[in-house]
Amino acid sequence: MVDVVLPVLDEAQAIPWVLSRLPSGYRALVVDNGSSDDSAEIASRLGATVVSEPRRGFGAACFTGLATAESEVVCFMDCDASLDPTELPAVADPVLAGASDLVMGRRVASRGAWPVHARFANRVLSLELRRRTGKALADIGPMRAARRSELLALGIRDRRFGWPLEMVLRAGEAGWRIDEVPVGYAPRTGRSKVTGSIRGTARTVRDMAVALR
Image (tube, rainbow, N blue to C red; front, side, top):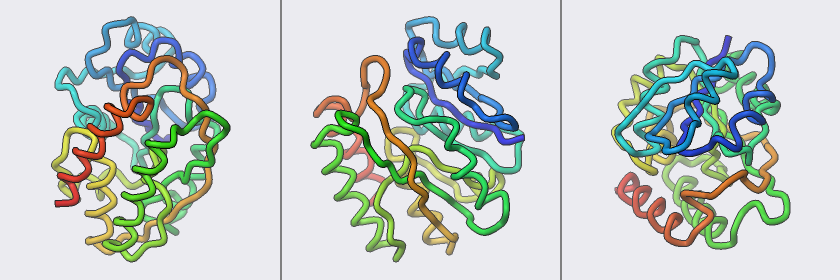
């Protein structure tokens, strides 16, 4: 069994589709980050394990999911239907096989899925990751997999949007084998809290800049 950490903030519209697409052998671990809709109730009714993280922040939700997970290998992915859970094995299999320590999904975007401002910010941050880690990375992939115990040992401190970047930076410093695989990226379901707006993207870049420092 592979636990899949799904940080959730008002994703009631997307949750049914996401959970219905989970492959056999993958368990949904939904971390409700203070939703004002019935996201947690829907996820629980559909069979997901649901935990609450009242401290607002993407990293806080991810860390709570990681701490709650029980499987040796843990996956993370957005729960807004922009990523297809059926692609999780492509990300997790190299880690399960011992061929990689961290695998990230490099997004291949369909039309309208990735706003220009968000794509540009991702490109800049990816170039900085290349410089610092020496890895040919093209994306700060929101779908990723690694071993739970090793992730906890990295000591990631960010609890906001710098969490994904700090994970890669610390993994690079630790000499991890980091790889990318292509995954589809579709327009999200519902309202975007991050990359769908310039303000949200700016907030994310600010948090990631702190992680870089």
